[in-house]
Length: 409
Image (cartoon, rainbow, N blue to C red; front, side):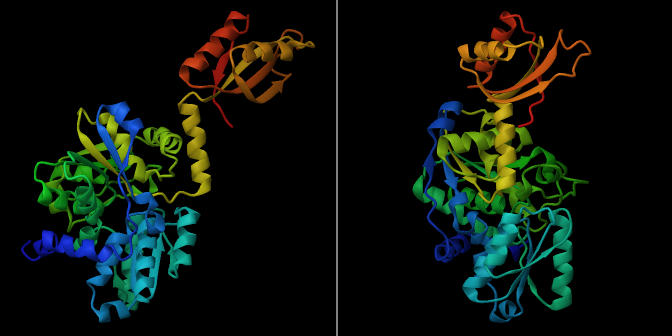
């Protein structure tokens, strides 16, 4: 442990801070009226989704490469990544004009694959999850002699990521809490270790997806454990095994770990877009989604938004599900007599309470007796749960028997 401790020192963090400034954008804290009002705290967002390459990962990748020898760089670099570290390594390698090979899971969103290639890296798709891609990258490193750059289980990488904490403190020295996403643990290790060096009283909370809580389980058991599987929409933090090298630092410096279910990330995406006009990927939203589980008031809290690399198809799906979960979109089924004027009548009832019809499906074969009933499925836009209930109650008052059905828009 003596040799390891040389990396995560204040001197090294300061060195990394000066180095990464060469390749990072200044991501100033954004005060959030919305989440401050929701929680009774002063909530600030650290928008690393606006960083070069769309995520914080360029920090650790670049600092790691600066610490390498010319010989190590000349061999060419290889890493494994679900996307953001891939772009960070590719960008940093381009700065040093060295070759980079990136192994990515086959499930990686296309936008991340294409952006990594655009930065000049060779991309190899292998495995369904990060862990499988990582094992293959290690095999290629041995076979071809490449220098492996681990996405999180590396002390120099973690030191580079920790520069986020330096920036937060320089801008807001009186910060009380920092919430930080956890996948493999590199970001949380760097941020929590530096934060405690700068202010031992600060609280640093790690946040994991409920379906990929490898660090929470590891801390519970006192050693690194591997989850049998992971299942989360937060692909950037879908890790089965956290880092061995960084685990001692994280378990010492992190104050607690909160887990967030996928459905909370879905509605959080909607809130972020509507209130801050920012696209933040599911993993990057973990810190904000965890706020409602943090039982504190009148504290200054910084939430690290770790990245914003989300493909359009995923974004579309998340928006749709978010609208449904917030009762902004819903579908009701009503039975009507099969005669002229009935459609106009039901539309008029909905219009009186400001319901906006966005889709109609008319099924004449729901009953053998078409004169008795045909089914009309109405997909509506509402302002939220209260407005949805008003629409349904109004339909009932007018003699219809609306049945809410699963929405598919």
